[in-house]
Amino acid sequence: MYEYDLFRSIAHDLKTPLAIISSEVQNVIDLLDYDKNEHEIRTSLASAQFEAMKMAHIVDKVIKDVYITEFQKEMIPISVCELIEDVAGSNINLFKLNGNNLNIKVSGSPPKVLGNYDSLALVISNLLSNANRFTENGNITISVCADGFVVTIIVSDTGRGIREDLLPHIFQRGVSADGTGLGLFICKTAIDMHNGDIWAESEFGKGFKVFIRLPVFGE
Figure 1 (cartoon, one colour):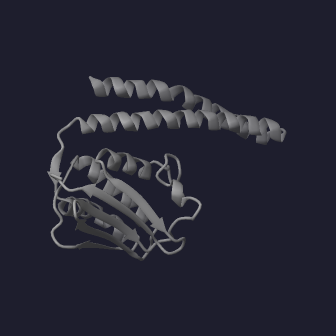
Figure 2 (cartoon, one colour):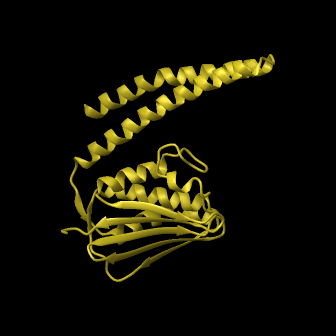
Figure 3 (spheres, helix red, strand yellow):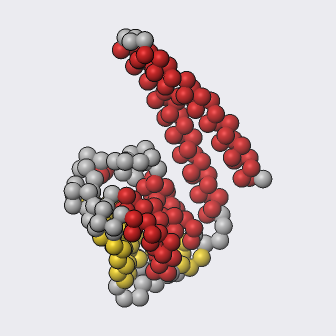
């Protein structure tokens, strides 16, 4: 019942702004066809942008609601290495399409973490998808190690990296070099709810690294 009410609410809330955006975009097309002045075009685009931001806020709320619901389910001890093997195996054909090699490096025998399997799998899948999207004929590496009471996961690639001005903001909703700007926002939401940390490092043109630190199970 909760899921039905949630998605009925989503459909209702998104219907109006989507209709307005469609109308305003069509209006801009018409204005361009009839060579209208710049002010009218800017007004229509500003209206479309306002409605798009309204939708973005609705999406934010939905993401949080969904994650809260997921985290009400059982949290279990998870082997990060086994989870990574599962996710990597299901994405192997995507790497081949871009001519990329996937390497998994594990230091020692990292202990388990307490987490929601589906949420952590989504995080790893998103990070691998991003790495593959921005890398061609290169290397994507997942490294796992334990340091005291923390398990660290590093997903790195040899792709084009990200601009310096975007780097501090990439985990905010809507910030992206090429995409929807939701993937890393979702990753941060999930890691935050695992009481972990996530951050990134990059030098434009020289690859991209995402670091995740999760508390060891039982500590």
